[in-house]
Image 1: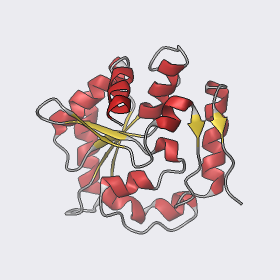
Image 2: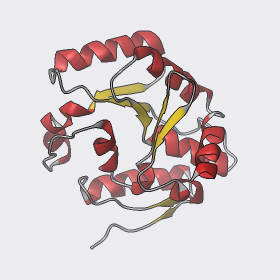
Image 3: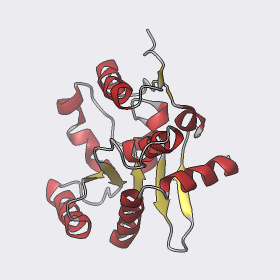
Length: 190
């Protein structure tokens, strides 16, 4: 795993947008934050397949966890602070303590409240997506990857039927296959 984390850091450092977002996220000092999802594993896919590191990445997901205030206004204040720091970079900032308030309306299935940002990452529709990174004040990177990093480096997309419905997985993987045709996409379990 140590070798994989080193390879992950090397790959992510090739994406200048991602490293700027990591630095900016550290400046915001959000509780329990991670840069996660597509910007992480898609940067790896780009590096592995010889593409420009930021190619095809739609946005940069910055998750944090603050259960002390679940109001939209509180999250919006953080989003506005992020906009001031990141400018035109597409950074999606979300308080994962609030997800249960809107998830069912958006995805059609209820979501129990998360207890941490890590719990939110655990529920992504693909295990390959379940990677989060953050820069610690001492310069070290913290990596959260409950399913490891092998699938990301191996271009394998594996379903994670914990929460997200099948159609979410299939919609995402259809787009990913167009952008990264070398992917091996495993089917949703019956």
